Length: 141
Image (cartoon, rainbow, N blue to C red; front, top):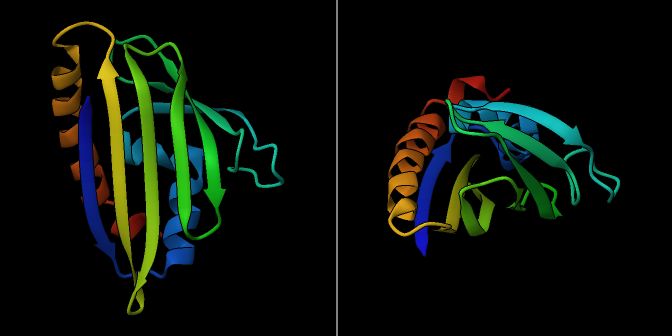
């Protein structure tokens, strides 16, 4: 199992950071992927539980992610639900107030479907997500 952990601090309050990162289309900046919203949440929140997105990274086939837990301004949990070369995937973003800003704790875990594939995917994902999170600050309004 691969496990990636990202911790990043933003000057904006949790409400702003959460609002930005919960919007599916904005995750293109984090993952370096083309993202298409497939459907809105079934819990009364546009980006809440049941909302889904399609991600297309480079030449790889697209895959789908679905939000499974959603607590406004605090927590987003999602998993890959279709079409990926990984299994047992879980992504969790926790938003915590730090002074007037926000601390984001983001964990991604998964297993490659083929031997040796997990570490290769983890390496690219780690690079893209770390860079994407570091560059988000000015985009969050």
